[in-house]
Image (cartoon, rainbow, N blue to C red):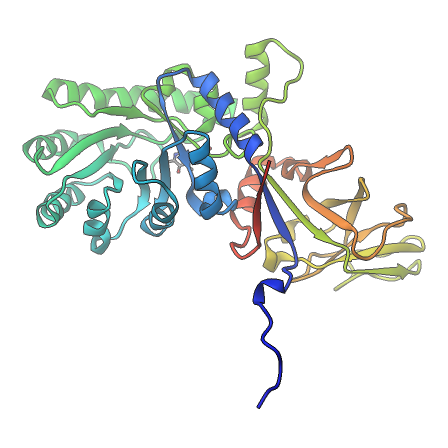
Length: 395
Ligand SMILES: *Cc1c(COP(=O)(O)O)cnc(C)c1O
């Protein structure tokens, strides 16, 4: 028999921690609201565990900011939101909803995208069985070539919706723009908007219109007034990051300023120095030979790696903050460890706070500071933050 005392598991410390700033989120919601004007609904896109922030924490934070409309990518994510939101909130599944979960969605008033005729027919049947209306958003094909109803099927779709109005609420007509983030893509976006309007014209001719028109994600919501319509689906901007450098520049042109800082990062990610090591000139650091010390140096060992969401693509590239100074990553990111150069941070000690994302003293690390592929890396790194890292909400 083991005589060990029972120790509360919450006393065991995780290898890193995440802080979420309520005031930063409020600031971002206010900024988006100011940009889009008073009328469009702001649907907060909280797919992928709220872009890694943690749905459980982020939904109550959004609720505090007055946001009641949430968009997710799957029925699983919808269920996570459902657990965290107030009864009067609206949840929309933009992506995968398996047929066997249709009745579940309808029963819980969860709205969803439809992009084929079969799903409309299934929805009628499911709604009859549940005894509640299915609330759907018809997603149409405008050139993204992912999901989207082809224009040849639009009349039939409208007939079906109209004939079954008792069972289906035709809530939205929507599409997703394929890259409103970059100026170089604008010709494609223009064409998508023209095609979207052709679908809407068909609905007008049938005399059967949706309640809401919506096509804009963050980039279009911030830069394309004609794309705002009745609702904007905003993800990345709410988390305080620009969708792309182009979108930031368009904002500067609009306000006629050289710089501005209207979006505030909500997330900070921190850990501590685990160990310090003196390394002699000529030695290699970590696995393989990707980093050789060109002089005597001191490195700090950080207790995190790609298994903890710290992207391996930051090997020999990224940096962290220690004692307010920048420390470069040396060598490969391992599964649970990586090393940084602290040769010139002489007072660094084991246990010192290490900032992976966030501020320290007067310095800050934005995820985008790591590379020119900024927005890809932003989204990828955040969305892969493991859900088991402890989160806390700060002022
Ligand atoms: C992810 C997503 C959005 C939000 O995009 P952001 O660029 O993060 O604002 C909006 N609409 C759809 C359909 C999406 O998949």
